[in-house]
Image (cartoon, rainbow, N blue to C red; front, side, top):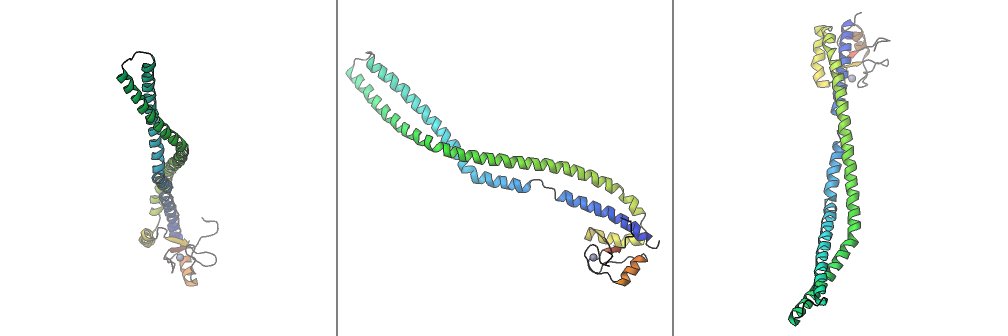
Length: 239
Ligand SMILES: [Zn+2]
């Protein structure tokens, strides 16, 4: 067979194409980068509302504690006033003033607590929705990363398996045919194409002149005039 040399090169080309395909797949694995970016955007955008929900809850708790302390003091002073333990008029007056002051404070705190209690549910609901959204994104990123890791391991194994066949296939290619191929492979990644039945380059679709077809049939190294790939004609039943 006059194109035996070219056929051995074609077999090497199939291995190299497969290796290139595996590398491309590995490079385009989805590691959730876009989702991680979306996560950071949501995180930044919702930070004010999430912080507000926290600070409002803390503020409410503080005011309720303050209120409880005032109520305890009021209870104590009122008790002192009516249990007959204090007789001194000045002392009674001072306690009454204290009670008045505490009552004013309690009323003001009541208003503040009510206002907070009115606003808090809406703020908390918004903050919770943001947290849910963030959690969902986190899970998506984790899932994608886990899948990419598994896929990468599979591809690495496949790459090794295919790569192991390369030296054997390369050894079968005559040097004068191998040289032009290796000169192209770095640049083109896929350095060979077949001539279709319609006499076109299978890679770029450019027309292949009849003279070139004949030369390829005779086992000569010919390049596609358009994409510079080395041309080969597949015999029926050959892959
Ligand atoms: Zn071409």
